[in-house]
Amino acid sequence: MKKLLSFMFILCLLMPSQAFASSSIADAVIDSAKQQLGKPYKYGAAVGDLTGFDCSSFSSYVFSLHGISLPRVSMDQAKTGIEVSRSNLKRGDLLFYDTNGDGQINHLGIYISANEMIHSSSSAGVHLTNPFTTYWSPRFVTARRVITEQRQTPIQSETIYSVKSGDTMFKIAKEYGITVDALKSHNRLTSDWIYIGQQLRIPPGSTLTQQVLTGDVHTVKAGDTLWLISRQYNSTVQDLMTWNELTTTSIQVGQNLKVRAITNANLYTVQSGDTLWRIAVANGTTVQAISEMNQLTSTTLFVGQALQLP
View 1 (spheres, rainbow, N blue to C red):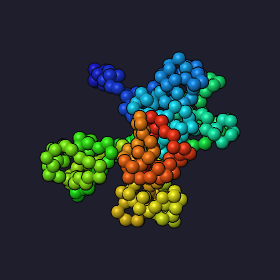
View 2 (cartoon, one colour):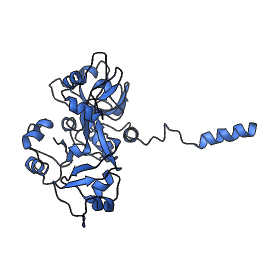
View 3 (cartoon, rainbow, N blue to C red):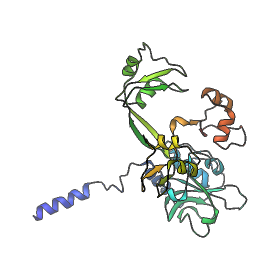
């Protein structure tokens, strides 16, 4: 018995702890951020300059380590991803503040928990602090989510996919979990060449894999209807049904409903030489629609900027 207990104890020591072996992007971002604890504040620091950080070069750097590109300044970072409410914050969300009281966002931190965020401030450099103290809470403006979650949707019947700018046969096949040969065969294609607007038939039995930015969640209360909830969140009943994969408008008290969902198919990363007009034409929309959706006040773009597309 003693030998068995000793063996089990050693085995437990050898097994990696889930808390330390987390594979989530949010945990990885926070771990990378904590490696910079104690670094001094450096106004205007270049992204990647590890001798010091200001608030936005810090967030840009740690997120870039995990494949997420953020603009250089806090005001522009506040336009990326999707907005989330304070009650729905998750690890890795970005918190934005107006510390001057002039209506302009000028500071941000990375959310860890209700009592902790990591940021680089002019007074203390990179450190941990409570994001909602009597100092920070009244200066809080908004929060944004830029980390995606993977969603898989089985395709029960044949689906039509419309080819978009940047698509390839390999990319589409990978997204639906099938081979290029299977996709070509189902559409009777003899080459890998495709064009924007082309309609491709996706065979049943495929699985659509999407990286999804999930926003607020609404818990259904007594008296709620999809129509009332859609009005509350400035959406539509059809939107709510689509985001939550509902087949009827019937809902139950206590049910959690996503009230916003944006997939990578709706996100465009600005490339060198891009203009709003070129992006709008390539994606079948208008400059005005893109500007309104992203709350742009000018037509100026920068490489790496993430734009939501209608």
